[in-house]
Amino acid sequence: MNLTKSVPFHNDLDSLLGEWSSAGEAFLWLASVSFGIIFCELVSDISKAFSPVVFPGHAKLSKKEKVEWDSRSVSTAHATVASIVAFYLLYISDIFRDDAPYGPVMFRSTLLSQFSLGFSCGYFLADMAMMYRHYPDLGGLEFFVHHLLSIISLVLGVHSGHSHVYICMVLLSECTTPLVNLRWYMSVLGQKDSKLYFINGLSLTLLWLVARILLFLYCFTHMYAHREQMKQLHNVAYVFLILAPGGLGFMNVIWFFKILQSFFRILNRKQAP
View 1 (cartoon, rainbow, N blue to C red):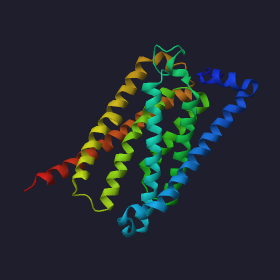
View 2 (view 1 turned 90 degrees about the horizontal axis):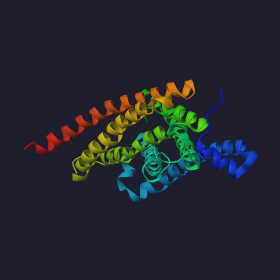
View 3 (view 1 turned 180 degrees about the vertical axis):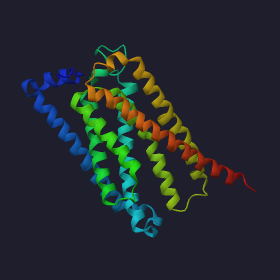
């Protein structure tokens, strides 16, 4: 089955490289994934070098906690970059606006969105390898499911150039990750009773509601409004476009209730005489 061309990505690539556009597309994919993996290694090395200097309490952490510390440093860096790029593509650039002159929104992508997806795929591959190496210290089965769904979605998105608008919505939800990691950092450093820890919990609860509950509801509403375009996708992409956000959304709801329970426990402890 021939895939519908993605615009303006394929048009721009044809203009730049001509008959070499297919090779250029493969190179962009490999380069972006490789950059994502190298980025993870660099951030991990920086974390190992500077965390003991910047945070005196780091020296008291166990070996397991130090491994998780570095892993969370990487996930924080990736989440920051990925969510900023996703926000730009969704709300500053006109690429995914319905009235933009690029044809059906389902089949739009750019050089930036392609590179961004490959970059995130590199991160998830590197992080999944780290989780496997230290299993189950860095997360249980649900994190492997989350990463696997993310990787397959990203590979399908880059291969076809389709559905980038929805993948960007999911990547934008990564903006909650820095707050999740900050909460863990304060916890292992003995800051659970601090005012900042309480503010973090409140901020995380509100941001999670917006970025991982309401944004996903908007994502599903947007899909329904563009269901005729979805029907033009390849069968595998169509099924996975429903499966991946649905699975991730379900996990987001479960985690949201856990966040709520944790926040209310702290709130009750604060109010206790």
